[in-house]
Length: 126
Image 1 (cartoon, rainbow, N blue to C red):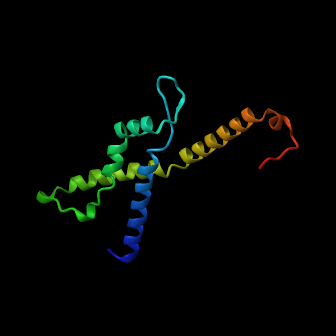
Image 2 (image 1 turned 45 degrees about the vertical axis):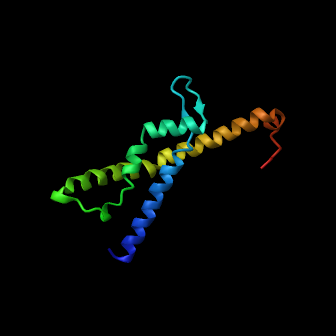
Image 3 (image 1 turned 180 degrees about the horizontal axis):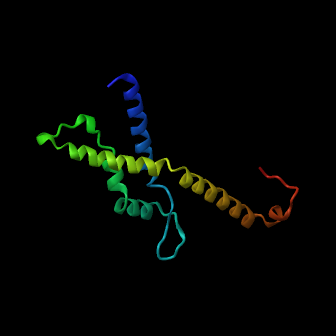
């Protein structure tokens, strides 16, 4: 591998590791109450029971593993998981939706906490 390829490989590995870590802190929607769940223990359990295994498998450094009996199809399967994972991470519409939801939530909190400021069109509290 040349130096540029190694750099790209390391950058993408770091992105996948950050994604794995961040998923332990991203709020989820409780299926029973349909409300956001912010309890980190519940979020972690949900992630561990869900996509964690796939996210973890995609972090295996395939270039460093030697497989006997020429089982290259295993590399192909894991590479396909990485492709799906990469598309999920870099899905711009999901990123924009999360950003929009965050802004809307912050505005809702601001309005609920200070009704007078919410009604005043001339006040800018930024």
